[in-house]
Length: 219
Ligand code: DC
Image (tube, rainbow, N blue to C red; front, top):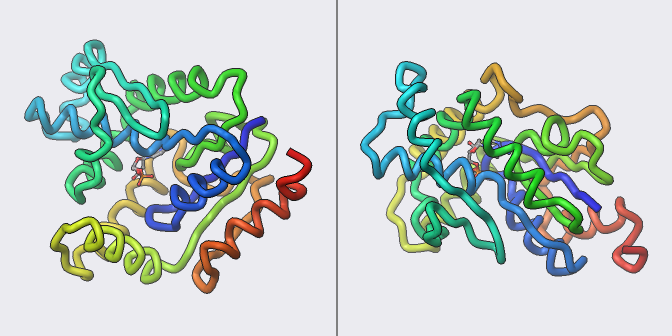
């Protein structure tokens, strides 16, 4: 069974997906972490992410191994979970995710990892592109300010020093990149259930999803 959760940055997708995966006993796949790992590798290789460097990034991809298991992201067999959450990597991931070969490689990988499993995937194109026939699709969103505030809290709680205004402008920039790119732009699948979490608690969001899929007892 596949549960697809898409939506813009900072909507709380990964928190919701992780809680759901525990509650339902499903595996969780954080597809954003995969694009972040590619952006991190480009950063390590001193490659600026832009269209002019697409061929350089394509070359880099040939010798790049990404994997995701046990809630951790691996880059070239190294666990990089703790190294990919900085804001500059967030922006890099948004940029690198617009590139054709990067997307093709990540989509193929996501389909392979999810094969024959009960999984929850979160991302931007899970319901529209990666698993258009997913059993359940949700599109989770919230107002820009709410998303920036949640992201700000998350970053400061993890010990980073950031300005709210910068977090908000990064969210706006990523929204623009993610919704206007040519390949698989972020959009709600027609058959996805829309959940606006602006005024909802985490428990309410999880409860709404569990109800929509028929209650955890039936799974
Ligand atoms: O979910 P996240 O913020 O960790 O994702 C980082 C970036 O990766 C996001 O700005 C867009 C891109 N992304 C994507 O294009 N497709 C996905 N399925 C997941 C993420």
